[in-house]
Image 1 (cartoon, rainbow over the protein chains, first blue to last red):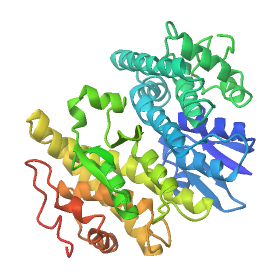
Image 2: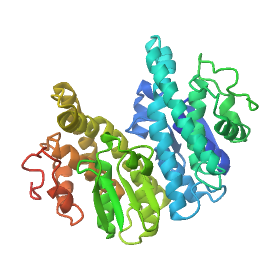
Image 3: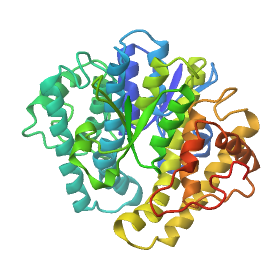
Image 4: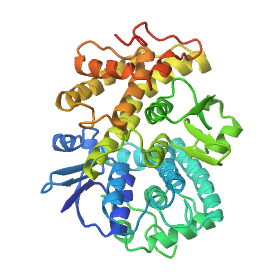
Length: 223
Length: 223
């Protein structure tokens, strides 16, 4: 059985969990707070980041969320998520990078720092200027999502793909941390509410990160 | 003909150029300084980053260095760079992420900021503390490369792969900017000197970034 090292608000672990859910791959959750720098975890992944997927029986350790997703795309046929022509696949991977790198750096990372790590680790108040910047950047990113959803059924084209899973993963963590103002984003709100009711997403929405509570609308599939 | 938007010290453009060189794919260089925020460039890539590969005749635009590499791996059979079993391929992609993300954030990005952007854009002196930190982190990353090369012919296993290209791309930019102390790193130095004499790498080593000069050993294939 795969062991997934993660913490509930890790957006990259969420992307992997959405993919495993869609593909019907079973796994156990192993809680890992990477900021604690546990030696055994660094032995699994010298980069010290979640997610890590480890199968002790097969002796396989998979590291890096994109490498993990490509692995299951190659080994599990069900629900292809990097599909189509080479150009279609490049468009999916471009958007995955946009959410994993740009949305994360602009929005999710500062929200995690200010609203999760400062509360749980540093016991310090959040910096309200940095929070405002993150929320402003979230708004810009969702404007771009609105534009994509206006022109295509799913973010990368005609079918649901890893781009949608990557976007939903980042967006759901930002939403948990109160960083998303949904007003004026009807297209993305509609796309996201379809996602929230998928069986792959429901278990994530019911989890809580220690003492940190999400806003009331967070796990409401009709919101 | 593909048009590659890049600047000489962009490590991600270097990775793509090494791959295109190994695969024998032709392209034209188009100089782009992404920090200038040119509107036409943002229309090609809303993320505003190099490299971008554009073919105006075919109407294809490829964005994100990993998406670009996967595209050519899928469409050009020659010199496979993400090869082997699914587990081998996951190991290649793990190491690509380690160099693209961790080595870049710890070493290449601060060196580019302090020694390139401060000189060319901000006209400010570099912060010597940040430079020392970057060089210390470079040393730790190269220790890990020494360890890998001690146990395998190439970074990800028995064959040269995209992991080697990603590592050489980051390392060469850091070396250009004087951030690498090679003493005590015989394994990585030997691996890198093999790379420097490859036909895919030679054109990169002869280019210069405006007024910034590399150290004498930089383009010496025997150093």
